[in-house]
Length: 233
Image 1 (cartoon, rainbow, N blue to C red):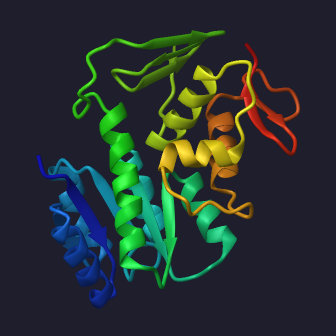
Image 2: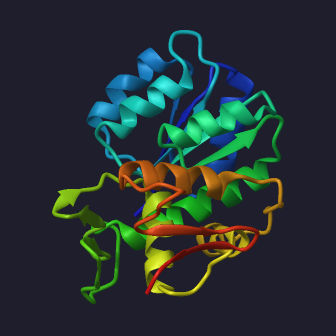
Image 3: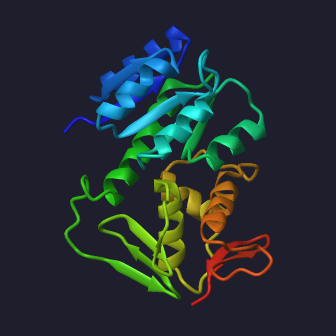
């Protein structure tokens, strides 16, 4: 089945270039140059991934990201023309899974799309080929790998694919420290990690907020300064 990818960018040349590369990889692309035209597609089309420009003429890409997250859990990649940390953190905090700074190399963009889709297909029940039922239970936290559902004290947690992946890795390595670099490579399977990259840090912070956890007195995710993160066994 061809994965369906949404691309929204008011710079027509960039949108057309992304479409070309994704089409060459066999993906079905839904392309729009404004947020307004995109909303109907989001409502009516079963998508597998979205690529959103931050700077759109009628609505910010951040707002569009929020609207998608109100109903859907598929991966979102933000495109930003600014190499500013605040834009990246804002996008990740609002539910985006990754970001790409313009100008970008098309092949790197394709690699990130593939990495996000691999994880989405692995953890999303409608795409997964896994038949084994796997449930992880830890101190009021229940994670169902097969159905991609997670709850804390019987309260559902609405996790993005990236958040779900991070929490799953930490739970599967309960009692052991997992470094940010190790988390990054396990999730994205790519080699573009750098020590200045705070993607994992932002996702961990967002996870803690959803779990009502704190850095100072963590009930679940503990920061081991200078090393990584762990959930006590």
